[in-house]
Length: 141
Image (tube, rainbow, N blue to C red; front, side):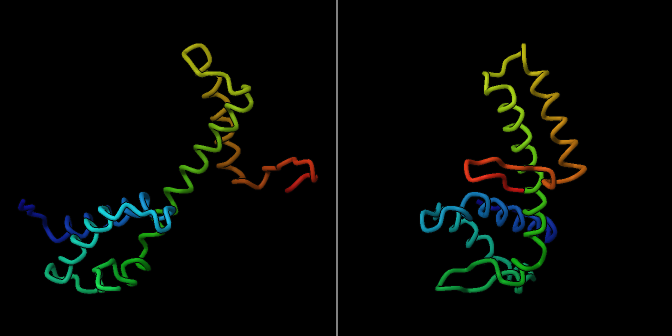
Protein backbone atom coordinates (compact mmCIF):
# COMPACT_ATOMS: atom_id res chain seq x y z
CA UNK A 1 0.00 0.00 0.00
CA UNK A 2 1.28 3.45 -0.87
CA UNK A 3 0.06 6.48 1.00
CA UNK A 4 1.09 9.92 -0.16
CA UNK A 5 0.97 12.69 2.43
CA UNK A 6 2.39 16.14 2.69
CA UNK A 7 4.85 16.71 5.52
CA UNK A 8 2.15 18.56 7.43
CA UNK A 9 -0.37 15.74 6.89
CA UNK A 10 2.18 13.16 8.04
CA UNK A 11 2.90 15.20 11.18
CA UNK A 12 -0.85 15.36 11.93
CA UNK A 13 -1.10 11.62 11.33
CA UNK A 14 1.61 11.04 13.95
CA UNK A 15 -0.41 13.09 16.44
CA UNK A 16 -3.58 11.13 15.66
CA UNK A 17 -1.82 7.76 15.88
CA UNK A 18 -0.23 8.67 19.21
CA UNK A 19 -3.54 9.93 20.63
CA UNK A 20 -5.40 6.87 19.39
CA UNK A 21 -2.86 4.47 20.85
CA UNK A 22 -2.87 6.43 24.11
CA UNK A 23 -6.65 6.10 24.38
CA UNK A 24 -6.54 2.38 23.60
CA UNK A 25 -3.52 1.38 25.67
CA UNK A 26 -2.64 3.90 28.38
CA UNK A 27 -4.80 2.26 31.06
CA UNK A 28 -4.18 -1.36 30.05
CA UNK A 29 -0.82 -1.95 31.76
CA UNK A 30 0.78 -5.11 30.38
CA UNK A 31 -2.44 -6.14 28.62
CA UNK A 32 -1.80 -3.75 25.72
CA UNK A 33 -3.14 -4.05 22.20
CA UNK A 34 0.27 -4.80 20.70
CA UNK A 35 -0.94 -4.49 17.12
CA UNK A 36 -1.66 -0.80 17.72
CA UNK A 37 1.80 -0.36 19.23
CA UNK A 38 3.21 -1.94 16.06
CA UNK A 39 1.35 0.47 13.79
CA UNK A 40 2.49 3.41 15.91
CA UNK A 41 6.09 2.14 15.74
CA UNK A 42 5.87 1.66 11.98
CA UNK A 43 4.64 5.20 11.40
CA UNK A 44 7.08 6.85 13.82
CA UNK A 45 9.96 4.92 12.21
CA UNK A 46 9.33 6.97 9.05
CA UNK A 47 9.81 10.29 10.89
CA UNK A 48 13.57 10.65 10.28
CA UNK A 49 13.11 10.06 6.55
CA UNK A 50 10.38 12.71 6.52
CA UNK A 51 12.73 15.31 8.01
CA UNK A 52 11.51 14.87 11.59
CA UNK A 53 14.26 12.89 13.32
CA UNK A 54 13.49 14.30 16.76
CA UNK A 55 10.00 12.76 16.85
CA UNK A 56 11.09 9.10 17.13
CA UNK A 57 13.64 7.17 19.14
CA UNK A 58 14.70 3.59 19.68
CA UNK A 59 13.68 2.09 23.03
CA UNK A 60 14.29 -1.55 23.89
CA UNK A 61 14.71 -2.35 20.20
CA UNK A 62 11.46 -0.69 19.15
CA UNK A 63 10.84 2.67 17.49
CA UNK A 64 8.62 4.78 19.75
CA UNK A 65 7.53 8.41 19.93
CA UNK A 66 10.46 10.37 21.33
CA UNK A 67 10.50 12.09 24.67
CA UNK A 68 10.55 15.38 22.76
CA UNK A 69 7.35 14.38 20.95
CA UNK A 70 5.63 13.20 24.15
CA UNK A 71 6.61 16.37 26.02
CA UNK A 72 5.84 18.66 23.07
CA UNK A 73 2.21 19.44 23.90
CA UNK A 74 0.33 16.35 22.75
CA UNK A 75 -0.71 15.51 26.30
CA UNK A 76 -2.28 18.94 26.70
CA UNK A 77 -4.60 18.05 23.81
CA UNK A 78 -5.38 14.70 25.46
CA UNK A 79 -6.00 16.42 28.81
CA UNK A 80 -8.39 18.93 27.22
CA UNK A 81 -10.35 16.03 25.73
CA UNK A 82 -10.34 14.10 29.01
CA UNK A 83 -11.60 17.16 30.92
CA UNK A 84 -14.46 17.69 28.47
CA UNK A 85 -15.46 14.03 28.52
CA UNK A 86 -15.15 13.83 32.31
CA UNK A 87 -17.68 16.60 32.82
CA UNK A 88 -20.03 15.24 30.14
CA UNK A 89 -20.02 11.78 31.72
CA UNK A 90 -20.34 13.14 35.25
CA UNK A 91 -23.29 15.35 34.27
CA UNK A 92 -25.09 12.43 32.64
CA UNK A 93 -24.39 10.03 35.51
CA UNK A 94 -25.63 12.54 38.09
CA UNK A 95 -28.71 13.36 36.02
CA UNK A 96 -29.55 9.65 35.64
CA UNK A 97 -29.02 9.14 39.37
CA UNK A 98 -31.36 12.05 40.12
CA UNK A 99 -33.94 10.32 37.94
CA UNK A 100 -33.50 7.07 39.90
CA UNK A 101 -31.71 5.46 36.94
CA UNK A 102 -34.93 4.88 35.04
CA UNK A 103 -34.52 3.78 31.42
CA UNK A 104 -34.31 6.82 29.16
CA UNK A 105 -36.65 7.06 26.18
CA UNK A 106 -38.44 9.79 24.25
CA UNK A 107 -40.80 10.48 27.18
CA UNK A 108 -38.07 11.45 29.65
CA UNK A 109 -35.12 12.38 27.45
CA UNK A 110 -36.00 16.08 27.78
CA UNK A 111 -35.84 15.81 31.56
CA UNK A 112 -32.48 14.06 31.37
CA UNK A 113 -31.17 16.76 29.04
CA UNK A 114 -32.47 19.54 31.32
CA UNK A 115 -30.74 18.02 34.33
CA UNK A 116 -27.51 17.45 32.40
CA UNK A 117 -27.54 21.06 31.20
CA UNK A 118 -27.97 22.26 34.80
CA UNK A 119 -24.98 20.20 35.92
CA UNK A 120 -22.90 21.40 32.97
CA UNK A 121 -23.73 25.02 33.82
CA UNK A 122 -22.52 24.37 37.36
CA UNK A 123 -19.35 22.64 36.20
CA UNK A 124 -18.56 25.41 33.72
CA UNK A 125 -18.93 28.00 36.49
CA UNK A 126 -17.25 26.15 39.36
CA UNK A 127 -15.63 22.94 38.12
CA UNK A 128 -15.92 20.39 40.91
CA UNK A 129 -15.61 22.95 43.73
CA UNK A 130 -19.19 22.36 44.88
CA UNK A 131 -19.19 18.57 44.58
CA UNK A 132 -19.62 16.77 47.89
CA UNK A 133 -19.72 13.08 48.69
CA UNK A 134 -21.57 11.60 51.64
CA UNK A 135 -20.41 8.28 53.05
CA UNK A 136 -20.99 6.30 56.22
CA UNK A 137 -17.67 7.69 57.45
CA UNK A 138 -18.85 11.29 57.01
CA UNK A 139 -18.83 13.96 54.35
CA UNK A 140 -15.91 14.66 52.06
CA UNK A 141 -15.51 18.10 50.50
